[in-house]
Length: 445
Image (cartoon, rainbow, N blue to C red; front, side, top):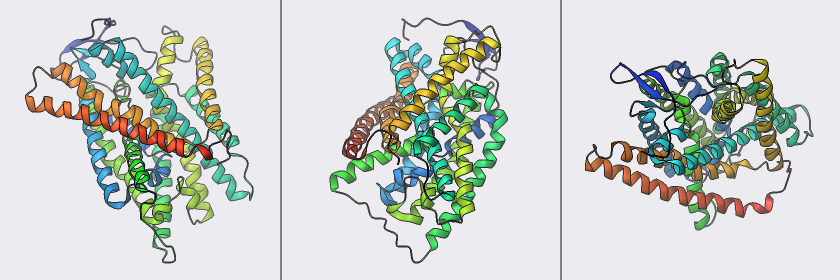
C-alpha cells in the first residue's frame, strides 16, 4: 500500500463477510454516510442515467456505428461497464478499511500520485458532465419557448435559467442521501416523458413517406474516428466514475447492497436508455438530431410535456453526478461540528454552490457545443476510472492470492482499455478540431 498516505481516524463499521464489527478508516465527511437502502440507491441510478442525456444518445452512439456495430458495442460496453463497476464495488473495504471516495482508495493502495490523478480525472468528468446537463436543460427550455413563439430567445438565456435552478436545488438538497425525498417525483417524470417520447418515435418511424438512411457517412478516416467517439459516448451512457462515492451512502453490508443497486441500473435502467436510443435511431436513421425532441412530429402538447418533464427530471438527476464535488468543498469549508442547515453552514454552502454553478453556467453559455465534449470526457477520464483503475487495484490487493488466469485477465483489461482511452481521446480531439470552424463564443445553437 502507499506508505505516504496516512490512515484517517477509525470509525466502527460492519464487515460484510464476517458480520462482525471491525474498524474502517474513513476521512470525515460533511455529507451523510451509511444511511440509504439499496432500493433508494438503485432508483437513483436508474433515474439519473435516464436523464436528458438520453435525448442525444441516438445521434452520439448509433449514427457513427450503424446497426450491426452499434448493437454490438452497446452490448459489449454495457456488459464490461457492469463487470467493472461490480469489481470496484468489492474494494469499498480493503484491509478492514472502508473508503467513501474513489481517490481515497487509489491513494491508500498506490500513494499520492494516483490519489491526485484520480481526483483530477473524476472532477473533470463531473464538471464537464454538469455543463452538459446545463446545456441540455437550456435546450429543453428553448424548445418549449419555440412551441409558443416563432422567434425564440437566445439559448444563453435558458442556460442561465437552468444553471440558477440547478444551483437552488443543490443548495436546498445538499447531499446525495437528501435526494431520497425527490426520487418518487423523478420516477414519475422519467416514466412520463420517456413513454410519451417512445410513442411519438414509434409513430414517426412508421410513417411511410419518411425515407430513412442508416448508412454511415464520411470518409474512411472519419468513419473510424467517429466510431471510436461513439464507443466513448456509450461508456458515458453507462457509468459515472463515482461508484465509491455512491456506495458510501449505503447501509451495511455496503458491498452486497451496492451490487443489488448496480443490478437494478444495468437491467431496468439500461433497458430504458438503450431502448430510447435504439428506437430514436430506427425512427430517423442517420439524420437523427443531436437533440431528439427538436425532430418530433408532435402533437404540440406532447413536445411541451417531453421537454418540460425532461428539464424537471434533470434538476434531480444532475445532482447525483455533481454531489462528490459538493462533498469535497463542504468537507473542506463547512463546520463539521454543526448541522448542515446551521446559519454558518448555510452561508458557506451558498457561496460554494454559487461558485460552482456560476462558473459552469458561464462556460456552458460561452461554449454551447457539448456534444463533442461528451466523447472527450468519456474517453479521457471514464475509461481509466471505469476499466483501468479497478483492475490495477485488483492486482495490487489480490494479485498474490489470485491465479495466473486472473492476473492475465486484469493485465489485458489494463492494456486494452488504456489503448482504447488513448485512441478515443485522439478521436474526440480530432472531431473538436475539425468542427472548430463552426464554434464561436456565445453561439445560439
